[in-house]
Image (cartoon, rainbow, N blue to C red; front, side):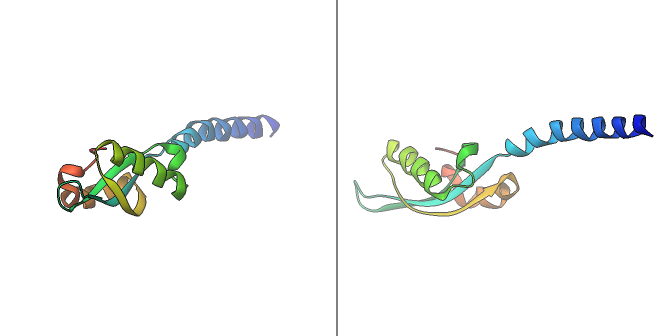
Length: 102
């Protein structure tokens, strides 16, 4: 009986060791609206991949998105949502050229 329990505990431990890192490394993305007003007003909707440590922190996500957009001459207007990979395909057509550009 003790032998079976040890084997079961070992199997459960190994399974958790394999699953937990993949859960922590789940990719996340953000969709946003941005503007550029240097040569008239331009707006765009885009999708961007976030680093793992920004997935659950709105303030950090906003800072990252703002900085990346600023490098391209854009200003962040709003973050619409933070989502996982399952939401990518439904946003790709709307984002067009700004799909995972920044």
